Image 1 (cartoon, rainbow, N blue to C red):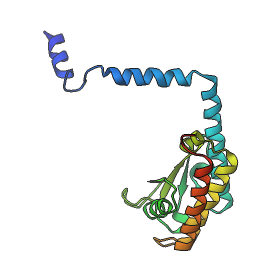
Image 2 (cartoon, one colour; image 1 turned 120 degrees about the horizontal axis):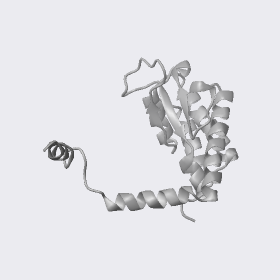
Image 3 (cartoon, helix red, strand yellow; image 1 turned 45 degrees about the horizontal axis):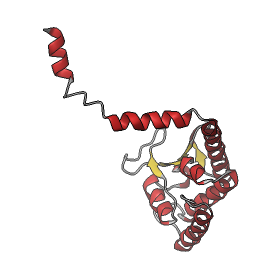
Image 4 (cartoon, rainbow, N blue to C red; image 1 turned 60 degrees about the horizontal axis):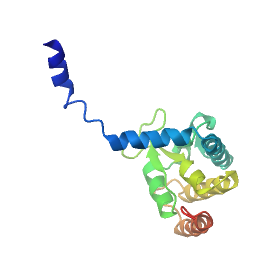
Length: 176
């Protein structure tokens, strides 16, 4: 009787069906992760994140934890006087994607934030290496610096960066 009550409480309310398509997708992903190429890819993702964060630090942006040993870098924008929301928006106009993100001891609302999270897997998948991510770091720093503590970047800087991003992505197409 207790087993029936537990089963009734768990399924279908808390647990769904087996979702065979999800199981198949996981099997493919795990199979890919077993290949030697995946290990090389994962190492390159980290090297690229370190190259990106290194340039950002050189250009005066604060990286939470002083750098990275993973696939992403979390930039604390408070020293620059700009918000994560505004930076995310301005970088998007420059054709670069990031996410506004809270940082340690952030007092900004979660809808605004004081940081941005930058990841390297998508660019690495396209074939970007450390040199490309160093250039991306300079572009990000250019846009943030042109914000001058406000909510908007210099439109000329944004347009110039966007043109360079287009050129880079044409050299490294998603499918090619």
